Image (cartoon, rainbow, N blue to C red; front, top):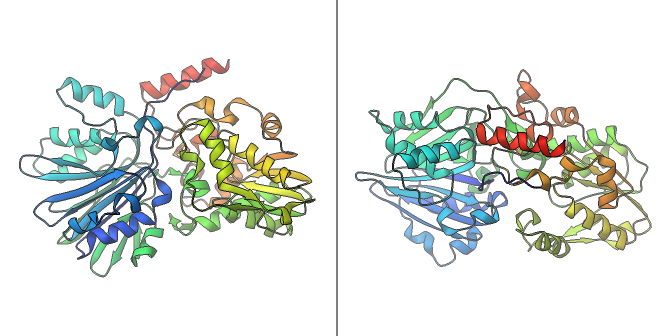
Length: 476
Ligand code: SF4
């Protein structure tokens, strides 16, 4: 029944710095604060202005660089990447940054997002003789770049960026410059900061606090940020832009201490909780949130209702997120290892359990069960986002729509499946208003809501159209 979306969908973190004596070390610490965006692989490439040198491997950043590999990454500029991947894309050859050596220069490339026309472009390039070394979308840009024949690297890049479609935040490093580019919808966050005279660019602003950088500004959709020894220059590779910031960044992905489009993620989540309280109040004794990403919304719900917020669920910090476990069995095991319900808090109580989203339902069912096993008298589940019912083509790992429980069952059915006494989701308007409409004149205030309502902010290509048509046929 399930229909596979093309292989690689990823949610990653990127970081880069130009002109700092400890470039690789700062990149390491920057990436460390982006580790929540990807735990399956990490890499850093640095340049001393003459050559580019890199190290990358599967695993957490600290494991990838545990044998002093950072010391070899000399030079004043560097870029790095932490990678999240689905099971199919889990191989060293897909870990970034990719390093390409051409006859007279080198290029390192890191990418956060997902291209919607990668398959078509790849096919075209292969027909023209290109040989791909990885299964990643990212390599497509390097091949397009190599084929472009304008008078400068930046112009070649602009031509290539106009051919790739979808969600992308790219970071490129050559011997002469650090370049960042954001897709025309600005799906993924990307910001510029400064440490003294050195510019840094990162997927999230929380990385700036870690490395002691000052926030300068966000990268805007369609922009090319070029940093070299003359400073920072901003160009555009297209004028056809609008904001469609991934709303799931606010709901789940980003760290609460990051700001996206000037909006603090913790504050947005708290407002989601408050709005949820207005939309779906229930008489209860305690409010608890599923750690970590739902704590802010739970605090908001408690504040709005006056029901005390309690730590009803505790997380074991040393187990990776269940979202990355590759199999159902491992996912269930992951929840057991990861969370405990606090008997002293929930026993005999009517509990409101706030979660940020329900993807497959497996985790929610297990958490409800944990609360009941710990003696909760009632468990009311409140979700701080609308039901996830459509596939994401721009970089989030849901391979099949059949995996999305809300695409296949009604809210009442989901409530029964997860074993809750009641279940309510935040409305679409509720989410848009809680985030705070960073771009009030644009659709959904500048957010992408496609995951919830299927309103895709870009044109779709044959592959995606066929996929959506097959889903419609399945549901008839
Ligand atoms: S479809 Fe959903 S997950 Fe994908 S970019 Fe849009 S809001 Fe984000």
